[in-house]
Image (cartoon, rainbow, N blue to C red; front, side, top):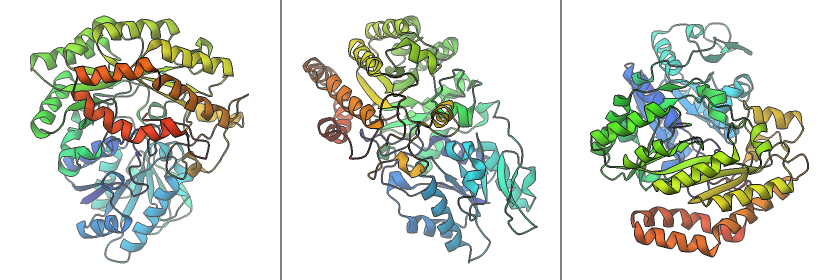
Length: 502
């Protein structure tokens, strides 16, 4: 059976797969990684696949529809996000309308964080949508393809929300087929980079924290930590950490080096790559043993110790993306971050000693936030002196504790999910603080960004960095080209959150 996996048309360079979807100021564009994993798993189950990333490749609606018509797909898997959900379901309706008149009707299933949090509500947005695959959807989609090909009832496929009606017809009733347990053995997933190789161009994707061009993979699923704002663990992957084996991970690195000669870096998009210290060291030591020579970046937490960092650096780690979040301990505790300010300072000292660059993430508008605590956050950012920062008002998404808290406090300023973006597609602030307006939060972020980046010492540091490490030049200028106008001229007219790339 032919299955098309679709990151649907929307705004150009709309980065739907990232934790906070938008068109980003820094030019960041994420690989559609979770969709690609499911595509590879479905292909491994015996189905023919096509894969379309419309925003990255600037493919129009008409071209997408014509391509699906030509390839004869019976099942289309459509990735969604909160700010694009109305576009996504409406495009699904257009797709069904234009393809349903000829031959067998196309079955459309929605996937992603938003529909996982609001499956029934999402189905009711457009009756053309046939189903939602909730949560981690690799096995759900493959079994759905099996059932459709065999003409079987879909009630047997766990993880779906479908329309129930008489045989051959849709009804108004929404049926949940039961929860699906996450994959226990994720080594059984094909290399996601093999799907990229067949269908995607690495030059379309960019992350300012990695050398360009790069490939994004993950070595684990699930996050054991409980940060109240983080969307993937709360809506799709869960909090139980499931790891790929060391050999499986390093085998994929060898595959990437052999098959992507133009690629300069790997981005490990695990929620926390060194969550298991012993395993992190084992991966790094195996990379060293096999003489893997490629730069890489990963997400980490401030509880990472210098001993592990030294091994990571030796294995090629260039940069770590780290959530410092706030300069106030009480706010850190309220958001369930599970870190201390002292850990943040100790971590940065260790990073400087090992020579690993740090991209620091900070946010404002948290429960209990005041003007004083925002200043504490800026003071912390400047004192830590990471290589780069992002400072933004909290972005809240359905399915997270943060969304529930702000909604219960009547601090979400819109019920229209399209308002999560500005007219140009940038992040829009849809929350306000208990004692701070959305506009004030945005103004602070504008000011904080300028105070950090326009320091003479920081500008000198970046020039010296590019002179000493010429590989940094292409990445830096690619990021600055899009980011500079926001740095110097501020935010959109709307209340925009200034998230760069997370």
